[in-house]
Length: 139
Image 1: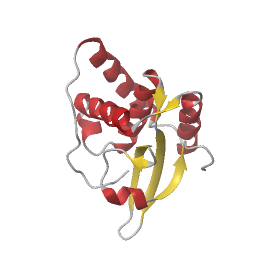
Image 2 (image 1 turned 90 degrees about the vertical axis):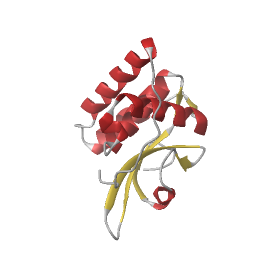
Image 3 (image 1 turned 120 degrees about the vertical axis):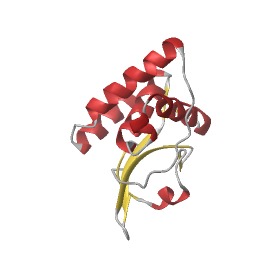
Image 4 (image 1 turned 135 degrees about the vertical axis):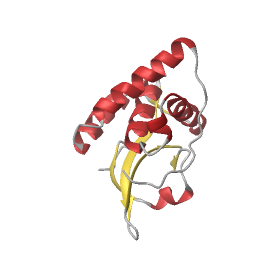
């Protein structure tokens, strides 16, 4: 993915939770090697039956992910978004995962949404063309 680098909100996590976050980020890294539709299918299955994440829940989890991984805090949007969904699911809720792009200039990006809006993303991400999403009724 290729959204220009910007500072990502992050928090320091300690103890058992830090280990859980690091393991989740590692699993997300492995998942990034799968084909996009397989990633979507996996995240849909993992999110099944979970209550929707609130914006606050998703922002907090995303900040934890960015706090343990320089890659996720930087240009690793695919790994960051997958890790956020996985960790949210471990917490009993799930945001919507999205992958899409904009043109002029072309930028591909992966992000999570809660309450219908991108979580901790620049405002223009809301206007990106979605290609894949875990949202009910979407491709």
